[in-house]
Amino acid sequence: MMRRVAVLLFISSILFLSGCSNNKPPENSFVTNLPREETGSRNKPAVSDDAYANGLRAMVHKDYYKAIEFFEKVVPEDKNFQDACNQLKVAKKALAKDLIDKARANFVSGNIKAALANIEEAFSLDGNMHEAKELRQQIKAAYEASLRAEMKKKMAVYEGEGDVLMAVKDVRLQQASDNYVFVHVLVSVKNKGNKLVRLIPNNFTLSAPDGESAGIHYDTYDLPDYFGPVDLQRGESASGRLIFLINKSPVYTLEYNGFEDMAAKKVVP
Figure (cartoon, rainbow, N blue to C red):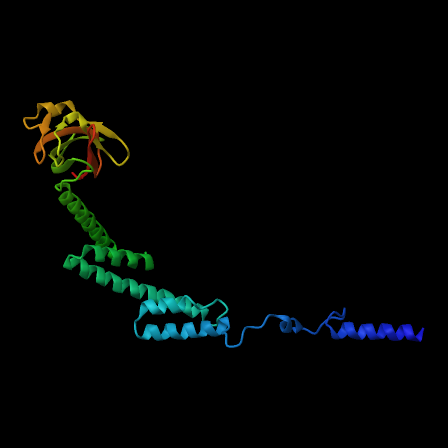
């Protein structure tokens, strides 16, 4: 009997020493069981403290990009978290103001693309800049106008996938109804191939971005300079006007689909 009691006492002592005892462990003893960070690593609060301090230094030097980068790294557990949030707002507003000034300068100098990038970044940082909304609209309008000017310039360049090259020399709109317009197109076609090319007006179509397309309107044949059937030898070209009735759109695509050749051009009224 005494031997059995001794064995039980020995087993109990082993269980206690191994941490498997049913006795309640001391408070906070679970901390010793957490995985330890590798030697030399930084804990999150320390990194957060550094980010906050670096953010303040960046604010002193008015380096708002860096300030925003640092303040966004401050964690909620940090005692400076609320102030970091406030400083972040200040940095974003200050950077937005600087970007507005750059946008205005680029706009005045004619660098419209850079001005648009500046002002869009500014509004992404601070969307409540009511005093800059008019400038934003002016820059957007100027950028759209510059794109249209580039497209108009490209219209006059001959392009095509085969022997037929096409260029658009002029575009005019005539109101037909509330939603439809007559599009008058002066088109020029050139044969760059080695064989004779037969061109007829019915091979031209005009399409809008929404997918609607139209063949030539019968009023085309009343024009004194309409594009009629023509045979072109190598290097020869022909020009004429076409009329299409189609819905209103800021841009169209004029296509020529022949038996063997095709060409397409963006058309900007």
